[in-house]
Amino acid sequence: MNHAPQELLLSIVAPCHNEEEGLGEFCRRAEATARGIAGEAFEIVLVDDGSTDGTWEVIAALAAKVSQVLGVRLMRNHGHQLAATAGLAASRGERVLLIDADLQDPPELLLMMMPIMDRGADVVYGQRVRRQGESWFKLASASLFYRLLSRLASVAIPRDVGDFRLMRRRVVDILLAMPERDRFIRGMVSWIGGRQVALPYERDGRFAGTTKYPLRKMINFAIDAITSFSTVPLRISTWLGLASVGCAALLLLYTLVRWFAGETIVGWSSIMAAITAFSAIQLICIGIIGEYVGRLVQENKRRPMFMIESLAQGGRSLDIPGG
Ligand code: UDP
Ligand code: MG
Image 1 (cartoon, rainbow, N blue to C red):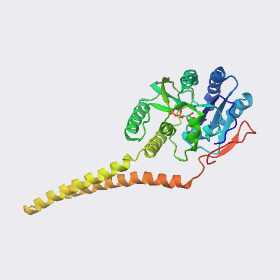
Image 2 (cartoon, rainbow, N blue to C red):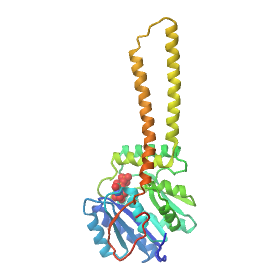
Image 3 (tube, rainbow, N blue to C red):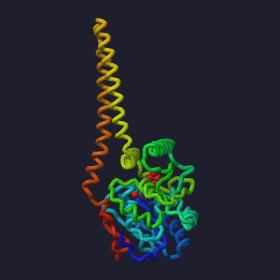
Image 4 (cartoon, rainbow, N blue to C red):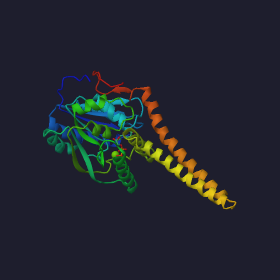
């Protein structure tokens, strides 16, 4: 990756999707924190991920006012993970903070992350000890997801950790060099390794607006995460197949015994039950395999991860992987 000579100490990267109400406040707090740490040598990269409200106008206005703000507008909604990737690709700082724009992750935590990195950490990630303003369903599903993932994944992905993290340039460059389109950033960063340190924090409620992660996106996100970090589901489908062979053999044995005993079996219900159960298992297994095959097809196309529509700081050419 060709980065300009590093004069920026810090980049703050925030993906934004329909965040017009809270962005001003986010930018104010992020800017104040960054200024206290890096003087003028920082940037705030705000990525507009295909918003349908006035988010881009707000970003453009902020960029016009604060010279450290760089606005990146994507051509359409690419989703949180790709929007974050676009922001990381545009960033140039020696250290990069990835953070949500809704103020659920307090930018001020940077004050605690920086000294930990000074002592040698490559990555300092926020670990949520308590989350305010979330529904019980969100908390329960998130908890289930993190537990499932940590059992299935081939690398250790810490629990209750989002993408809120401070990374060294080195780590960001490796992350950007990873070519996959299906990006589960927190898992990819875990995979990179190095010295990664957890910083416990309390997750606030949203400053404004509502979650941009409805159930449908949450399920897709979970499937993406699991399929890109584990092939255990494929193994499970093999085991399910073997188990059904065992069941079928027992059933056959039972039928034969009854037949030799001269009993005619009136077994419509049991046949129906067996057929539906086994077809369900087969469909599930085909579905699991399909998830992986589908991923192969998608990755194989090697399309750009995101398309940039315009920038709000002008005059700077960007080095974008695959873009
Ligand atoms: N986001 C995005 N693209 C999307 C959905 C969300 O860039 O398609 C951003 C959103 O603006 C926020 C962050 O990703 O800054 C996290 O989203 P959200 O707060 O809705 O998720 P939650 O915190 O509820 O899990
Ligand atoms: Mg949020």
